[in-house]
Length: 393
Image (cartoon, rainbow, N blue to C red; front, side):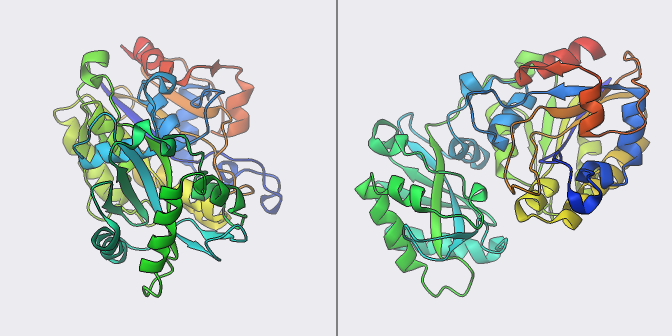
């Protein structure tokens, strides 16, 4: 029987006054998830260990069945794995955003972690320019997708820079960057690179003002997924983070033309790719970034829309091809991205597991509150995969 993990990144949240104290999940029209909740096991899972920050890197590593306290080294190394970069063990890999700041100083404010969700065709030339002007034997700039890029510091894993505690820019929207500027200043090397990059990027015709390196670590090494779980699997996602986790663990990585990571992503393309893979594969990890991006932007309207489209355009079509009894489904999010905070939260995430071997909960809808009401909680997120397999095989 096929197993599908359907992940709506950042879908969870808190009650919102403008929605009559409903969450965006509760406000969204989700007949497919509601039906699955009625027929399946509903509970919560702690995808982020208590001593780690609530990032998508950590949470999705857990959902794929790998303990982040053992394998996680940083966000940058995961995205480097997605690109297949050849790295030495002591290289330091940074995730590098192109950001919009009021100014690159302790008085600066983070206006936008994505520079207006800059398109890839506009961002790549900027990374190429940075490489031309500032790339050397120590630093290499690698282009990625949209605002998400990489910076590799040769041999940096053994140096001071590996210890810098730079906050993710999506945690800083409309907030001061003073603490991070102070942190960058601990490394004359990084401080100079930041300021030199700002000069290179001046008046570039986009909203980009600065680079923002963060999430650094040495290269990622994961166990082989097929050997560990005896399934031939694939990841289907728009973002390098998921692709990197997939590639590092030997899962097939499927690229989807028109997959943007936003509300207007290519839903049909993701479904078609999933169905084609399942003709010969066993496990599909289908990831939708839209709810998370909407949460970071503080857009109630977009977050509801992305949840509804996840239900109607991902879950619905997949269930038409693989109705209950022919496949098992795990539906969840990796973490909460509440509208109020515009950043990630480590609260246990709601999930549904539906299989012909599972009894139904009888719940009328799928929500954070209903998932909590069942009393079922898995405290170690990386054990969810094996828990699911034990109940479905």
